[in-house]
View 1 (cartoon, helix red, strand yellow):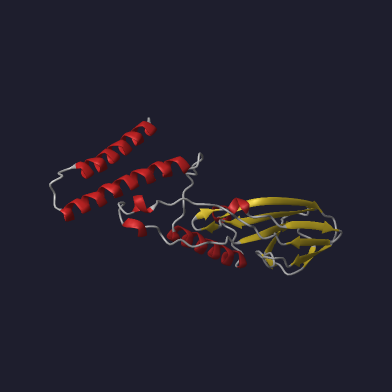
View 2 (tube, rainbow, N blue to C red):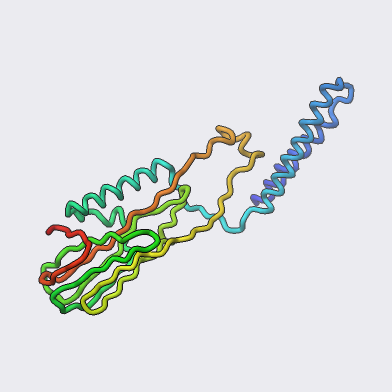
Length: 233
């Protein structure tokens, strides 16, 4: 049904252009030249419309594009949450960060050495808190905030770090960099020149690199050595 309507619209546009060209043969040369230009331009628009419709992708992504104001708000919320973590406040973390990966390691030693290796994206931030019991298990959760490129959310593309426990040493390997490739279609000149605001209505969006960190929960009686930040201790 939509295709039929579009074809009718194109037919009307082309017919109007032809009508302009054939109207009033007694017009002056200057006016006739203007009508030729208008008629030719109308037909060009019709041809451009047909071509645009023929190359549109079969799959349309209706994902919401974040505005610059929304991304700024998200970035500020992440920064504030990280600052709160350093102050020992872990309330409402799940509203700002998502849990991307979890680990669980049986551990019955008296001390644990945590080694943070520097990767392409630097060194992972690690926070730790003690459990109320000594259950012989170390739990780790990787939290990640939303990331955007030009308003497009690519948080799910972010890699997780690698955690390796060898004896009394827990090694945290930083995640590798992510390469993201995507294409976006924007209104062409034939449409945007008549749309509200013209061709310059697109918002100048920026990018947000989401904050991330690992939260460790360790048995109450073990000694922890390493460059980490304690929560509530």
